[in-house]
Each structure stands twice: as C-alpha cells, then as structure tokens.
Image 1: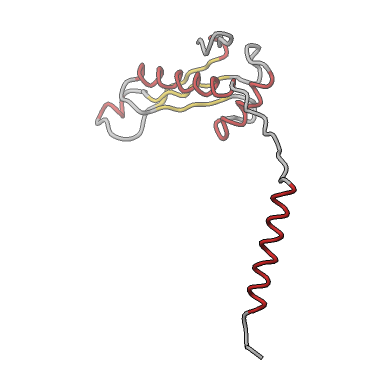
Image 2: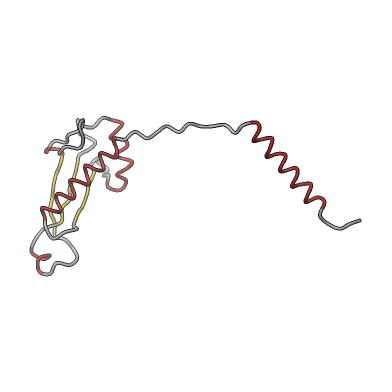
Length: 136
C-alpha cells in the first residue's frame, strides 16, 4: 500500500479480518461478512521513521493497541470490497497526517510599552472607582 512518495507499507504489515456488519441490510447482514477490520503493525514497521511512529500513536488515539498496532474498523457499505477500500484509504490518510511535522511555536514577549499602557489603564480605572461614593 503506497502512502506517499517516501513511505510504502508492505503487505505483511497489514492484516485484514472480516466480520458480520450490524445495521440495515436484510438477510444479507446475517449471511455475509462485510465489515472489515484492518490492522497495521506500526510499532514493528521498518518503513516508518521513529518521529512518524510517535505522531501516529498520538493521532490514532484509541485505535492504537497496547502491542503497537493501529486498528481501523469499517462497516459502512454492504460490499466487502468497498469496505476494504475505505479502510485502506483511512489507514493511508492517518499515516499521511502523521508524516506532517507540526510547526514549532515561537514564544513572544509582551513589549515594555504594552506593560506600561496596561498599568496606566489600571491606575486610571482605580482613580475612577475611588472617586465614586458618597460626597463628604
């Protein structure tokens, strides 16, 4: 499975299993195993660099298992082939999102002028409030 120009997932890293779907479909639901569970052994994958693996772990959330696999379960259509295609596309999209390096946040300082203006405004408000009250 090709994710992008630099990452390609080998077939041995992906495991597909099929189950019966829930929901509408009449007798078809009781007879045919159309739901797809796609499992990708991400932790053991030699094709993913370590930073991508750590980002994938964060992005995958509850789809990441204890043994380091990403599991995607699809039962959207009544066709097993379409569900397989949807699952593979979702897995590829998840890995693509993990390849994007987040921008580093640059911390900024509050300027001295802004601090001075804030203090002056506080003093002005304090004076206004102090002048309120009973006239003596």
